[in-house]
Length: 114
Ligand code: 5GP
Ligand code: ZN
Image (cartoon, rainbow, N blue to C red; front, side):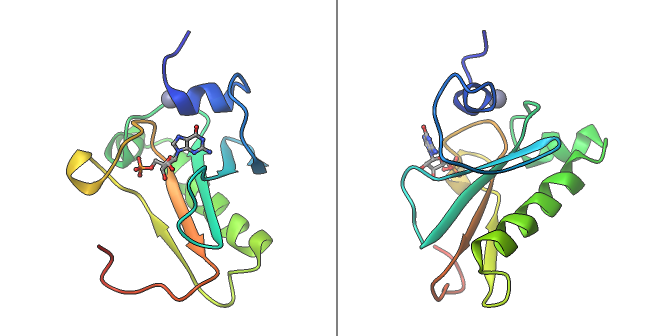
């Protein structure tokens, strides 16, 4: 069995507040939200980070991006604006090594991010 937390969420072995299941991608609310909308979007297949996902070159990164936008529409933040974040590597704050996009919205978002 995989020891990966997000693989376990995908397998429904760990509960999560799932907001969208779209083919090869799954979206669920972050357990520690940083904005009124804070949803994590993951490919169901395990890739450690964005670089590995891109290297797979099988259209999965495309699916992930489309799922992010679908979440933003569903959450009602597509018009007001939202941010998609892929922390890649420990130095960028990645703590779960199953690639995930943060979809953040519902409040003003400052730039640059910290
Ligand atoms: P990272 O820091 O790797 O970019 O993002 C990991 C995110 O996963 C964090 O925002 C954290 O709050 C979230 N997270 C960690 N454990 C869980 C969990 O068990 N369930 C959910 N839904 N989110 C989690
Ligand atoms: Zn995984």
